[in-house]
Image (cartoon, rainbow, N blue to C red; front, side):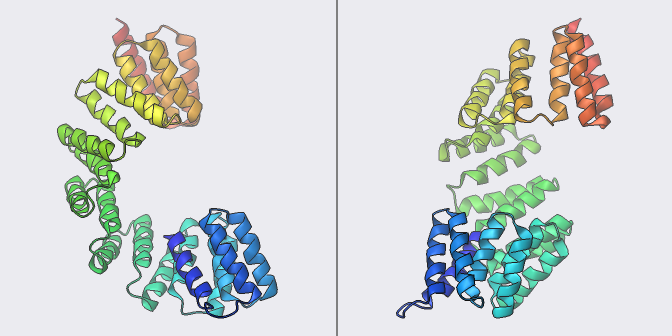
Length: 346
């Protein structure tokens, strides 16, 4: 959304001079815009800085520089640029959207909502304003208002599945899985070749214990996007629940091949290997997960459990200590896995 807003204003700022001789600042902004399109944000920033030095009242330079700073997560600097741009042209709705995004990223939700509301006041058909405001309401926990904004997007553009995806995700987040699935169904009717629709719908079906439906959705996602590591990982989890351990291991391996930094895939494969009695393999994979994310307490708990199964008590206790250091609330869980290990070793 942010990038599209910037492009809209770049076109307004730059194409307004077509057929005329561009000023030096306009030329620099045009060059900066092209650099942005190429992903050369620092070089673009230099162009906008120079444009502002030449013409301190050139709106387009402040707007575009604010966009680059927003991209770079320099939120206060971006807000400063948007403030100046708004003083120069207070009736440009996209400015308020971008300023709202900066506040949203700073978790200043009320300020963000006020900005998005101002953008909607200026342009009641600006989809990204509703989309971002809906997200801000969602972050605040005011779900009815979030749904109202997503409904507005759908009313304005029934073919925009971003509304349906966000609505579905929102419902899934609050365990309203049947409603979420209905939203994903509608999205699939509109854009049947979007892999992420099936990925998300598969997760909702799995939550409802519709394992066959989840498996079918993850398989569809893989058919559409064969490099979607999450689909292989999620399908592997379903296959594990179905007792299809060979298939599960193959899918986790594929997920790791696609994304060698997939903590979840290594951990899930470790879980299957442990269940299959390959304790060394399980240790290898969970250790790789820890290498990827050394601050996940649950990984140390699991590795400690497997070490106990191997009879390596001292090493297991070291992992349990690390787990508790990261998350002291897991003491009861550690005691439970210790008892489980005792039973499984008998």
